[in-house]
Image 1 (tube, rainbow, N blue to C red):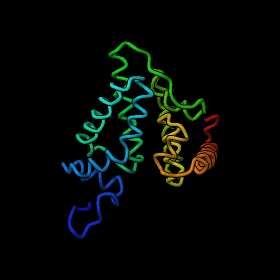
Image 2 (cartoon, one colour):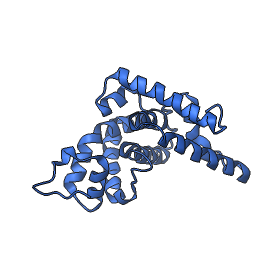
Image 3 (cartoon, rainbow, N blue to C red):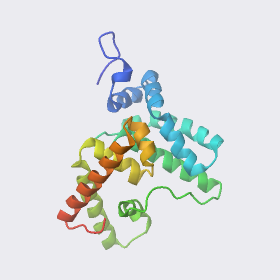
Image 4 (tube, helix red, strand yellow):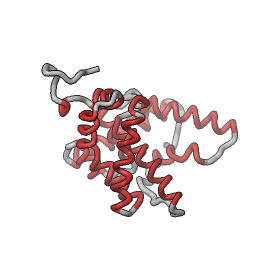
Length: 201
């Protein structure tokens, strides 16, 4: 792990995984850098779910506080930090919506890949759970085989419900680049899954 010294690069040059590890040890400067990088997309996502600016601002602070406390649970082998952070945002927003006895706003895409998110919510039989666990493993393997830019774009679009424009802003890339990454990534993902016998995903 990097350490903050006169010879190390500034925090703005650290990758997310190093910053998260530093944050997990109590480094508030690392947490501040991560906040600077990702507070905007977290707030945007929270606002889309809660439809209330005040509650979204409160949730933003709570999300980063939880990320700070649970930073040791993050693994960059499972996905990008922003995907992990937005998963926390989604879960906390749903909890808040339930407290308010409101139905969550639907976000995301009608693309069949989105159906993967609901597999565990249907209370299937034991046999179906085994099939679903296999599919989840195959999807994760297929995702891991993608180039990092394509994998991150798919995670943000299809698993976190972000728009292509929001992804372009997060990654600092032209909108056309993001559209190309998504198109190529989804094509490769489906080809890989088809080779594994998983159809219609």
